[in-house]
Length: 487
Image 1 (cartoon, rainbow, N blue to C red):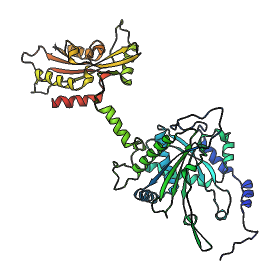
Image 2 (image 1 turned 60 degrees about the vertical axis):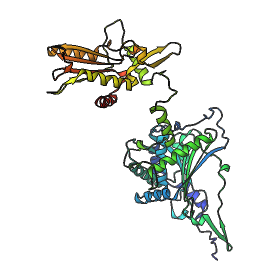
Image 3 (image 1 turned 30 degrees about the horizontal axis):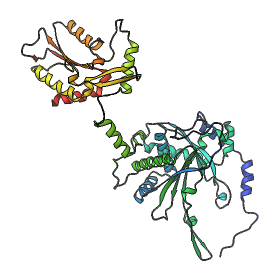
Image 4 (image 1 turned 90 degrees about the horizontal axis):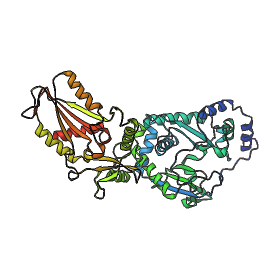
C-alpha cells in the first residue's frame, strides 16, 4: 500500500495562488488585447433562438434544452484517424467542427468568438495538485469563407497553441483590460469543451472493491450558458466511444430547436468524416467550407418537391417572385411613360444561319410553339393587385387570348446602318413587350433585301429571340436552346 506524503515543503495550491498574483503577465496582457481587438464583444451570434432574453430581467432559470449525439464506431475511428494524420488534438478537431457549424448556422458570420475551458495546468508542478485551475478563455477565429476544412483546422491549431502559452492569464484581467463587464460579454454565452475520459476516472479500485462511474441522466442538466457543446471521448466504452451533448438555455431555446440543431451538427460531422457505409455524397475537405451543407436530406427533399415539381393544388395565379417584383418595380420607378425612355430589361439573342445552311420558318414556328407551351413563364402576365397590394403573376392559357402567345415579326434590311437600327431597337425599345398581357417573348426574322418567298432563312438573314428579363434570365437561354434543338 502506497502512503501519501504529507511533506509541508511540497508545492501546494495555495502556493500556486500566491505565485499567480505576483508573476509578470505583461506579455500575456498584450497577447489577449490583440486577440480581441476589433471584435464586437457585446454582439451575440445570430443563433436560431425561440425567445429573446428580457433586457430588464437578466435572471436565468437554469432550465436546459438538451440533445445528445452518439457517433457510431466507424465515424469515431474516422474522426480519430483524421486527428492523428493532421497532428491535431481531439480538442482542436472538435473545436474546428464547431466553428464550421456556427459559421453555417449563423448565416456565414466570419468573426466567431466563443468561450472554452482550459485546464490551465501549464507547469509540471501543477499536474498532481487538487485545486481549481481551469480557466474560461475566449477563442476567436476570423474565418475566411474561401478556406477549406483542411485550411481551417490549421488556423485553429495555431490559435490553440498560441492560447496555450497565455492560458494562465485570468479572465477577469482579459475583461478588465478591454473594459468589459462579464454580464455583457457575448463569447461567455457560447461555450465549447472536449472531455477525454481516462481509465483512472472511469474505474476505481478501493480496498479490493472495483467501482465504476455512473453517468447522470441528461434531464438533470443545468444550463450555465446560452449555447454549449461538449464532446466526450471514452476509449473504454463499447458503444459510446465518442459522443457530444448540446446543453442550452431553455430561456432562449425550445427542446425541438436544439434537437434540430443537433441533427444539423451530426449531418455536418458525417459529411466531414464519411465512412464506407455512408450514403452521403463524397465531401472534398479541400473545397471551401461553404460547400458543407446544413440542410438535412429530408428537408432538401421537401424543398425539391415544393419548388421544382408541379403540384396539383398550385393554380394558374400566384404572387410574383421577389426578383420579378424587383424588376417590375424598378421599371416603373425608373421610367416615365409620358417621356422618351430606353428599355434595360430586353434580352435579345441574335443568330444567323451558317454559310450554305437554310432554316425553315415553318419548322421554327412549330418548335417555338412547343417550347412556349412547355414553359409557362413564356406566357405569364404580371399585374398589380390593388386590393392585396401585391404584384401577381398569372399563366395565360391559349383560350384566354385571341392572338398567339408570342409574336413572329418579319422585316428586311439592305445596309449595315439599317441592320444596326433594327438591332438597336430590339435592345432599347420599351414597347416590344406587354407584361400585363403576358407578351414576354418575341421572334424577329430579318431578311436581306426581301422576305423569302419559300420561307427559308439563308446566311445573309438574321434571327432574333428576344425576352423580357422579368420572366427570363441568362441561364434560361441554355434551356431554351436545348429544347429548340430537341423540338
